[in-house]
Length: 315
Image (cartoon, rainbow, N blue to C red; front, side, top):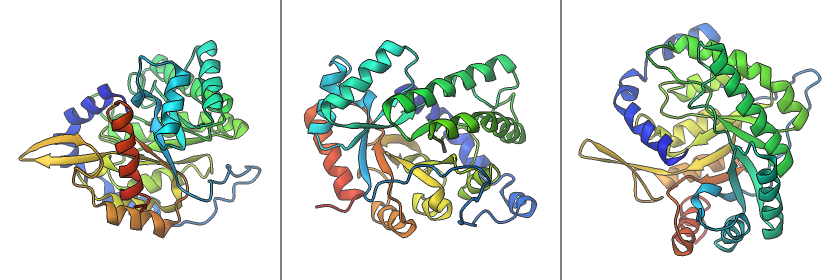
């Protein structure tokens, strides 16, 4: 998320905690158990690319100094210990090519794309014009991913608000994502759906069911460790979602006398030992990308070391 998105999250905090349980019990009865972890077995659908043998450490392109050139930013990511970078949707073809060449020059991979249209133009909207803008943004993101050699695009599937009910967000977003699956399969890029403070997919059981209803290997989970701390436990989500998780965002969250704050890794309420254990239990081998405030070289080196210690168990 951008800084604006994180600020939007905090506006949702109070109501999110209150509405967590609504409808979850009925899901199990209506749709059955979401815990089956076998292969999807879709006829004619080739499987997505396999993850690397070891977890890779990633950083957002937006966390790197904005005043620097793309070449300097990618070099800094490499020099401070990161293996991969997540880049935002880039509609301008010239800029997209510049980003590609800069990453190649630095010897670092752009492994994923942060879709940028889903907050302003949610797929769950009842306005066809809004939905089409959202779909167009995802198509651009998927083509960016193909150009950059990425294997996933992050998508926030919808938003529940005064104009969109929970059921509408579920049905509408799934309908539109189904339209994107053929392009995702053609380009060999996973649509990775993230849980955020959007009053939607408020439990790991719900989220697992949401994925399983697609019956497609091209729709997976982008799990954010920090986003569930307000109303759940990351290790529980990790174990429930299991092999549905293809990518991860890392940030930390702290409750302070009724207030909430995003903090650096290790300075919040996350039980990182349990998170690390849960990732090991599900055999996770994707990338873990920090989603924090940006900073200079010293700051980025510190963040990189925190990932090593807290998530990767190094040092």
